Image 1 (cartoon, helix red, strand yellow):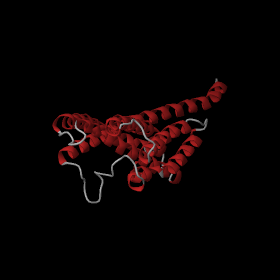
Image 2 (cartoon, helix red, strand yellow):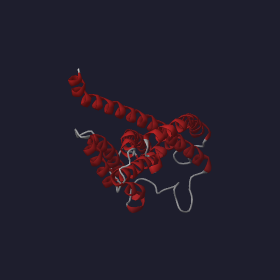
Image 3 (cartoon, helix red, strand yellow):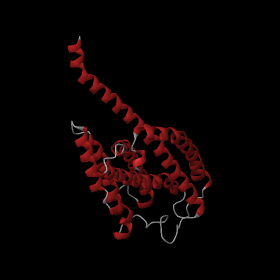
Image 4 (cartoon, helix red, strand yellow):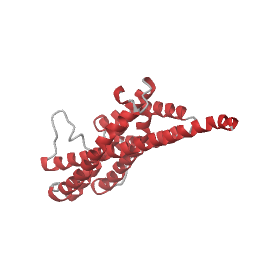
Length: 247
């Protein structure tokens, strides 16, 4: 991890990864949509409505994955002062919020024909909604201070406090009675989903993951460039009185 703390080294690595991630995202999205919407069979109970799963479930997985990596970045920022950890958290937060919003919206679209309601305040839906607010809260908090360092520290603390919500989301269907079915993919005894449905599900997850990697790299590079420009402006502003005196 510390090996890539140098922004220049990160930029070189990002230049190699970015085109591959973008290419995989495009190809996997096309393959996932084709297999999920065309070739996969309808569910024996839900019919074609089950196809919402191929967007809803990968978005839910990504919402948890992104927040977990942001919490890990918060540890790196607070403990080791990793220079890119804060940059990553800032870059990843809007993407995580987007995945969570997709999860909530597609879940409502799926729930209405299956449950007869768009929303219920059960443990799974409520905890995912809290996750969405944690993303929004982080983005607001890091920009709420005039001193960026204080904002980054406050945001890191919020991430570490909020990470307790991740296992609650994961195990909510096991701990409480909810409308959601128990886990059917990530199980100790193996998935219970038919293979023709499981394959497009994993392809779409790969597409979402590759998309996230590509976009977060672009956002991190833009943030690093903006900080470099800001540092140059501060240096010029500090040297301005000396230049004026010399003239």
